[in-house]
Image (cartoon, rainbow, N blue to C red; front, side):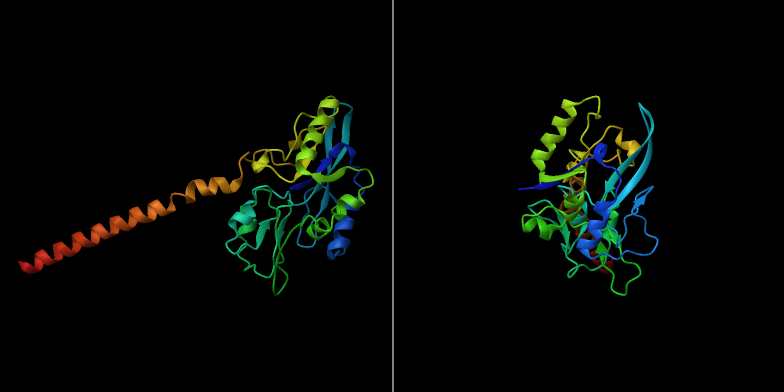
Length: 255
């Protein structure tokens, strides 16, 4: 039963409660000078949730919009596909979680992620890759993620992904003058567990709008599926060259 979170940008007031709750629940260090709100994405090894601040042009004029950012928890996560030791995996409940005990630090996950979410502990002797875990332990206990529980305006809602997707489209249909007709995360990179609706274009809020609508690992498989055939073919070519060279050498020795 895949879970998800619906973020309604129109309801976010930028209070930063979600970012504080994330820090407290996950025991993340709050470094001096770390802002609660940022003008751009400020995710880091010790910051798994951030609230971005954007100035946008709205029909009523210039306005502020606040966007909660964190791991999108893709339905077909590229980080998990790239990790050859399975340190990253998507759970049936939806969260894409990380097992630091088996991670070898290759950082392929960081290269694979289309949203550049995973961060590395560059300043630690034994570094880990860090990102939002969607409070998986809380979900297992039947609770909602800490950030959702802390939101005072219900800008973020936790539930079954399929039902949240239906609700997102229902809100848009009920008030088309308020929302743009798009649910971000519905199909981006094959779909994500975090869904967004907004009253301004997502490109104006810093979202990547140039991403594929297929899961990134599917493109990898389109290439990798030919690897066995290429290996077999190349082996046959090398074998043929070896046999030809050997026979030629034997004929030269006979003469």
